[in-house]
Image (cartoon, rainbow, N blue to C red):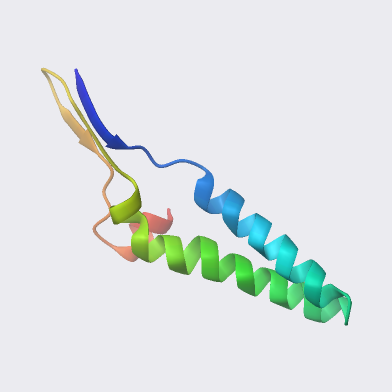
Length: 82
């Protein structure tokens, strides 16, 4: 079996949550609703939009053995998010 590339990890979700919590707490000092909206917006921008676009360049792993070839299907934006 031959493996190469970088497998998809939980890094996009963790970084999205960290940015969302940080931005939400900064704006949460002004208003709870503003902090919540800012946190959710930051999470969506980082985890879904940024990583949704750049996922094929950052994480792309292949596995080849004598019977099959496995890879991550990143042909569309929705498959990358999934």
